[in-house]
Length: 428
Image 1 (tube, rainbow, N blue to C red):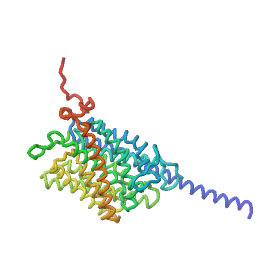
Image 2 (image 1 turned 180 degrees about the horizontal axis):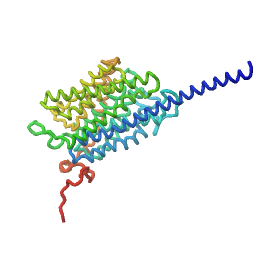
Image 3 (image 1 turned 180 degrees about the vertical axis):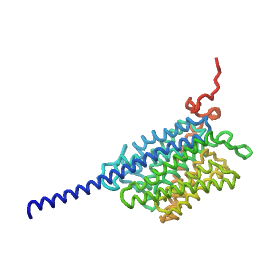
Image 4 (image 1 turned 60 degrees about the horizontal axis):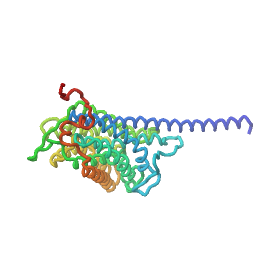
């Protein structure tokens, strides 16, 4: 072989390897940038929760609700960094528990399509942990001590959520059983919804919510405008929640999956909102905005477990049933005299369970495994949080006094108001 031919062939091989290397690096960059955008969208859902919850509650508790949401994210991120992520994603475990050490995030990976930078993966996952924690905020609004909420938030983000999350997403026993939860109908939403139910039961209803003769009083929130904006933000944020859970967008299969997931998410939310509106209109003889808002969220929660596994038509059915469940759940809570000011349990708890079961019915995953996972995770969230809230109550550390509740938690707990100028002061 002539020397110049040798160098030509060698150069071609070198150029080819550089092209392949470049493709791998570009795919790595695009996939991680895609996940970064999705993580930001999920983090921005905290703004949606803050607006939804504060709008559906009294103006005198607005600061308290906003404060709880910022704490869920800021304190939760630190807890998830030091402990939670290691409990949830340790490389080795016994199927029930795992732990890779404090501050574990993971080692660097070889760049390539589908490879996730460990720092990026942590950022995406911590957004989910914060979402699970903040679901409870609305269910216990208006009567829980801020210090008690801090204790709850630490325990759920640092221990309860990561342990059950490991059972599925960390490769634990539910994953081995064949249970499937694509983006967290159960792992995130049902866990938070049933934790909220436990808090609402142990705390008891807000003063004046239920009459002694068995009737109830409506306690409307101070701004449906704010709540509606919150739901729109949550809906947009869900495009990080669900499509982002594909964890990659490079390649035809990934791109097609992300597009299907986005459309299914949209259709389920729309169906949930319309069906909840129609059912509430039939039952209460008027179109109810708050029911429609919760219907949208119920559709989003229900599709989250199976958005990659069902057709467009099936997503409409799943979202529609979510809309029916949320209205039914709100009525059930009122009959049971359980005060959940924002409907956290019907939206996230009931619809989350339905999402898990629907994954078996429509998504082709083993139905028995779906039923088991759809019962175990909510039960875990309810039992652990019921125990924690009961312990706090036993030490008189859970609920504010009647006078503090009447005055409002903004003043009694924080000495500040969201809407200043409404307090009456004595002029000396």
